[in-house]
Amino acid sequence: MKIGEVHEPNRKLVGRTIWHYDAVESTNETAKESLEADGEEGLVIWADRQAAGRGRQGRLWASPPGGLYASIILRPKQAHAWILGLLVGMPVVKALRHYGVFAGLKYPNDAVYQDRKIAGILSEGVYRRDLYHVVVGVGVNTNVDLEQFPPELRETATTLKREVRLFVANDEFLDYLLAQIDDLYSRYRNTRIEFLLKDYRGQCTTIGKRVAARTGKTTVTGKAYDIAVNGALVIMDDAGTKHEFVEGNLEILK
Image (cartoon, rainbow, N blue to C red; front, side):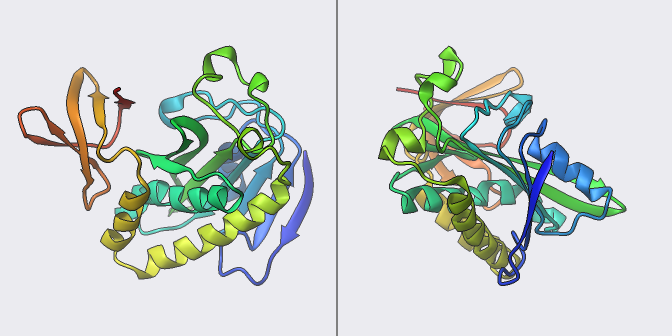
């Protein structure tokens, strides 16, 4: 149920209008539905709870009460649209650091702290009324206890509440986060992509680590070496051959 609507006229684009729900199946799906009713670019769908939140590759995103769940409608140039899902990780990390957690980015779009996941991003392209849109979903483990997660996630997840031992109001966190995404999106539309990817590389904790990248039936093992201009993770295998990884399963090896 929709429980509120907020207007922020001072924003450039992202978050000028926010629709607040007590619970939805998925903020990304609600955002897509809003496009049928001419949902405007920059519209934010924010929910206190998700019944069926999703992560990359259709994985279930655990969405316990207390977390922050939001999706943003954007209309980027289609050529670089998927890279936006990478870049939005930077404002998420900036917001977490602002509130005391010095997180980094695990390729492609997880925010991690001490190898534990604290936030994730799901970017989906969709056509509506002959226009290409990208819906960017963000889930942040803000005011959540680890006991609220399924047992299999408790060793690999963390939360803002656990790390800073303070209550951070979700509306305050969201306000700060949207201001950073608004700024990033302005830069995205007016700056060469390679400059933004250089910034992303500087925050990507995967670089320099040994990884196993699985795409279909193929597995590449080696060192995460760089971020390519197309946003792919460059992996150098043990023979010195470079491979580009975009979609699949990426494991950080010890």
